[in-house]
Structure formats: C-alpha cells, structure tokens
Length: 252
Image (cartoon, rainbow, N blue to C red):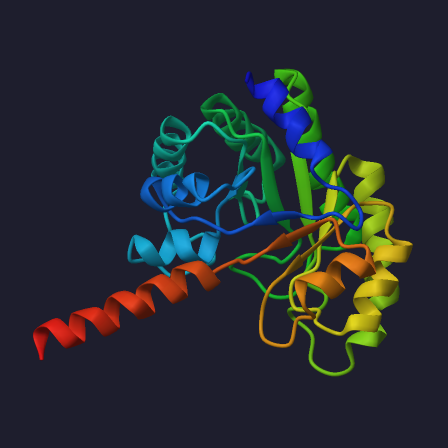
C-alpha cells in the first residue's frame, strides 16, 4: 500500500464499538514481532522508545534519534505506523511544521500529539493547542497525506481529585481540536467506566483509551463506544520484566 492508502486504511479502522487495538512498540524488532502477531497497525510509545534508548520520557531523547528509530520501523513492517510524537519537539509552529514534514517523509501516517506543556507546567490553552493542531494539519495537507492526528489531552492524566470535574473541559477540547483538524481524541488517565462512556457520547472525534490499572475490560470499552485501545508503555514494561527475571536466573 502507498502512504496515502495506509493513512486512509488507518482512519477507517477507528470504528466506534469496534476499536482498533494497538499493542505499542519501541523499536524495529518489537514492531516486527507485534506485526507478525497480527497487528493491523503499529503504534509507538514515547515512554518506551525513550527508555529503550536510555532516556527519560518528555522529549529528552533527540528528535534525530527518534527519526532514525522510526525509519527502521518503517523499513521493517508493511502495516500503517503511527508515532507517539509527544508535543512535537517544539513550541514554535514553524519548527513544528518542519518536524511533521520530516516524519511524513519517513512514511508515518499518524501521530499522538499532546496538550501538556512538555518541559513546562500545566497544559496549553485550548486556543493555543488548537493553533498547534492546525499547524500540523496544514503541514500534512501540503504533503497531501491525510495524517491521523490523535489529539491527546492530559486533563485526566495531570489531575488530582474527581475526574468527573474535568469532563466538561475534555469535551470542550475535543470540539476545539476537531475544528482545528484533529482526527481522534486520546484520554490517558481516565479509567472510570461511566466517564469514559460520557466522553464517547459527547466527543465529535473517535476516542482512544489506554490500558492501565483500573481500566475497564476490552469488552466493556467496546460496549462504551471506544474506537481505539492502546497499551502504551505496558508491553515494554512486561518485556523488560521478563528479561530481568530470566537474566537473574541465568546469573544467579
């Protein structure tokens, strides 16, 4: 498939009540294994990618190295690949345009793009993050690639207290991000079944939930209307836990 065909197919896989499953990869080897297991697409986890290269999460890993790792993944698998792109590795819209153009040239067809102020505190305002999403959409339109912009909001991940109090803001962000050109809404940190259902009902964008402690079952998430389920850093943590246990046995 061409890049455009992969992008179109990836968008089609986001079906409310029939979610695409992303068992997240961190390098070419893990992507190859996950693809061979039957994955319809590969998604990366920024935390896992950074950890596997000896970096902390939060755009500490150089973007050039990220691009090298993605290029190897693209050369290894034939399925669509979406990149966890954190905050785009820049707060400058011109540089963001260049960064997006570079990863599109590698063949990427989707990104996660977060509204947390990386290396800062709090979240970007709704207006500012919408401008950033619009800049990404403009860059992808110039390349004529229907990039899937999975707009991540951290209103739940960064919150202390009752998550129900953030439902209104999350839906307001969903509407604004959709108008700016986003393709999906990613809500890491939200595990409450009823609240996930409210987001799915009120969001104009297909909703992505990440598996973590307390998340409802896959079956229940499907019933609630989730369109995408991802595993984030969990596959890396599981794999490294197994590796450590085996190494300890071998070296004891």
